[in-house]
Length: 132
Length: 418
Image 1 (spheres, chains in turn brown, red):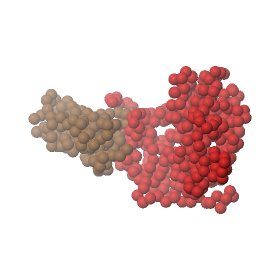
Image 2 (image 1 turned 180 degrees about the vertical axis):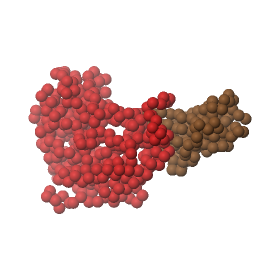
Image 3 (image 1 turned 45 degrees about the vertical axis):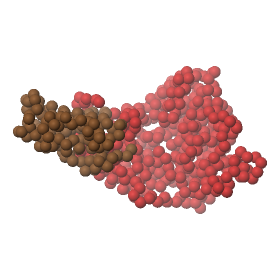
Image 4 (image 1 turned 90 degrees about the vertical axis):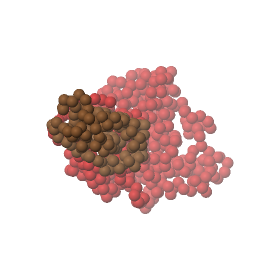
């Protein structure tokens, strides 16, 4: 299967690989997917007092498209508010990376990872609504 | 020149920038000696081997019959028992459907194995739809069948037992001689798909009690587009043909024989007969070098399938915590195959690995390495470095590897399957 140049670029030069301290109150962690399905994404965001995502890190077990999808969303969420980040759609990711239909689930997983990280942050910080 | 008058094995040079080919179970390059043997039969000697009235036909027929003898000699058969087909898929179809249909008034049961090639399994599915009953034998964790289970499955209704000699994904060698003896004792025909076995391991249709054997030319350095079905004559195995017409191939497979392909197939068998022993030793050394090199530098890697009962040219390894397709992308300088779901349209991981009881998550992390005639020790050393680098890069990126290092049991987590 031929990959798009953008997928190859993210795979070969992944952005923001790593981990943030999951016990830090300003950090939200999303872990989605399943090893049995062939992909697991861990996405972490660090949220400033002003409610802006100031850092994001990922680790992914998966194919090139899964790695590229998670790498891309760490770039996209940085500098965004939680609401803005939560509005990222899998179709945007799939379009940006030119994913073929069989790989759409990778972009769905990346969208789920953002939402899971935001939910975790909100749960930990006791905020029912996104910070403005 | 060797004892058989064969030229020594030539080297194949890889085009600049092309990946190192380690996928010899998918196909093999034509041996240049095979191509040399084929070439005249495309141009000046182009006759139809079935033309009886002129020299063009006679010389083509002679070439085809020589090829038939070369193929027969490699498996201990008589040349009259070799039926040319388009490849092993057709041979498997012809063996199973041909026998099932011919003997359907007397017997309606077929036995095969869950790890067979898709063309055997799919053919059996079709026969089930026609009303035949099929038993799919399981395999043990090493990939081999349990002979007692086979014996228990054979009934007086069993027309044919089909068990491959060498598995295409994990290279394990089934106990063919024992299976053959068992089938004959119980009165069932024994068919074996030997696409991955012919030219790799010694085979003898009489010593092993084989009634039907499928062979593919392109798996043993011959051309694509041709194969054969060995059909025993004494005692005779009868078939209903799939392709009818001019009655060529003793009525079992009509159609004009492709002389150049037949000649190439025959030459490939003659070379294999002469060089198989030395080649197997050389490939065993290369395989041990590859496995040893990887094990020395990478923890948490597992060989799938029995390592002792296995052709020397195959390794199938799970690299825990690294997904197979992602890994294939990382080893782009190598041409290999993955058991991962992501490489297939179905998104299901390898049914062969699953049949061994390999966990789904481990099946996702497997790569198949196929070594062959033109693989060098330099290729292997390059492959080791490249694989180690890619696995380390991907493990550094893998949340599962982190959990493993932290001592978290991945099975203890409740994953949301998607």
